[in-house]
Every structure is written in C-alpha cells, then in structure tokens.
Length: 351
Image (cartoon, rainbow, N blue to C red):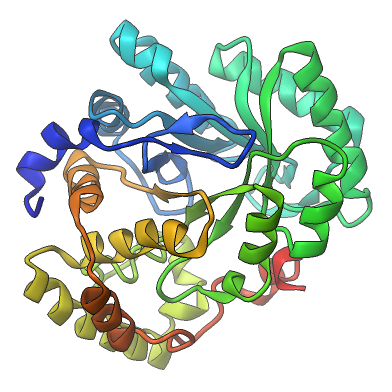
C-alpha cells in the first residue's frame, strides 16, 4: 500500500495486536487525539470528528486522550465523535485516558496528582465528559513524585473491580516503577515515546515490559511531525504550538534532524512509500523483533494524514530495508531532548 487513496479501504484487514498479556486486542495502530484539542495550534473541529469517524471505519479501535487535553475539550470531542459514529464502529471503540496533570487558567502545568482520592475524582469527570460507563485503559500521565505508584495503581485497581475501568496502563515510567506497579495489579500497557529518533527505552524499559508481559503503546512515532517528511525549515508555527519550545525543533538542532529525514526520504522513495509510512512501519516492526506487544499511536488530525498513516500497516520491511532505515537514521543520531528541561524533569522514564 503506497497511496493515501487506498489506505482507508484496505487497513481493516490488518491483524489485531494484544496489548500485553492482560490487555485488549486492538488494531495495529491507535489514534492519538491530543492534537485535535491542544498543543499544535488551532484544529478544525469538523475535520477532527470526521477523522475519528474515518479511523473507526477503517478498523482502528483504540482512541487515546487525556483529561487535560484542552482542559477536557478532547474528551468532549471524542464523546461527540462516538455519538455520531455508526453503531458498529462506536461499539468497537476503546478509550485510553491519561489523568493527573494539574493545569492553570492560562494553560500552564503545575504538577501531577496521583493520590487515590484524586484518581477517583479525575475518573468521575472523565466518565461524564466521555459519556461512557467505563474507560478501557486508564493511566496517570506522569508519576506523582509525592505518591508511591503502588497507591495510584491500587486506586485504579479498585475502579477496575467496580467496573468503571477495564484495564490499567502506565505512562512514561522507568523499569523499576514498571515492576513496582505490576506487583500491585495487572498492567496492560506502557505508553511511552518511541521512534527512530527516540530509542532510549530499548536499553532497559522494553526488556522489562517483555519480561512482565506488558504491552507498549508508542506515541511520538513521527516525533511530532519532525520525521513525517512534511515538516520544513521555513514552517511558521502557530501560537501555542508545543514545537516552538521543543529542543529538537530549534536552530541548528532542527537543521541536523531534518538532514536525517532527507536520508530517510531516499530509503522511502526506493521502497515506493512515504517518509511517514516507513517511519511508522519501522515502529510496527519493532514489537515482533523485540518480543513486545507494540501498538503505535498516530496523531493524525486530518483524514489525509490518517490515510497516509494507515498505509504503513501494509508496508513490509525486509531485513535489508530495516538496515537501510537504520543507516539513514542511526540510533542516537538526533540532536536535542524530546521535551524542554522542565518537562523532562517529570519523566520517571528518564531517571
């Protein structure tokens, strides 16, 4: 599959993947919905809903959101998209929700709250906004340094017992935290950044997930558009776009990273696919190679970008292809951290 026009029509035939030993079976790609509400400038509401509908029609089952995306806007958007989707597609949809971020009126972040009473509070509001009686996978967005992960996961486990949550997930945690959490209750998946230019989790986190039977939902597979093949040096970012503060998009860092993308473009052209498709296909290939159940999340806000991403499911990379991809973008070749310093400090996975 190499064309956007055919991708939506053929993607439903793709085999499903299980999210870990205890998680649900899902389509090989999930839809990350954050950009429809926050951090990448204005989004077209009608097009966002149409994109969710197109994803569901194509067989996508996992919709990923956070209760703090647009201060609840994203959950309400998903509610509307599901209410207006055909019944069969609506029933297949699974919601993955992150919680815990504390926000200001101005949109700032002031920390994370993982107290058991806060978990119950966040959950109640999310269920109301989503218009559902349960959330399929529930996870704290970042570890609260003042609350043991055992207490946070224990509170979600109580919600599972009550029927309000189906599965417990984690987000951006390191190997030790992963072990401690799994000792409390079954963990379906770890949501964490993973791409050709973000491969640090291969050293310790992925082997631990494999050992514990925990799946991975990989976000940032196109590094916020940086390695999509569509980002250019002269692009003007909208006010509030996260990439305006991201180290990888600044100055010489951007030039050097885009040079890597051009090397990848040559490999993609030789394969007859787009840059985005080969980058996503590489992540799709990693799960079987590393023995981890892995589902990439694609942050498409438009149907054309969704169609391109779905085309990656049909891309088969041979050993020679994989070698060419990694020669174009060797591990550790990118420059610049994936978040500004203040946000890096909140990442348990980086400690």
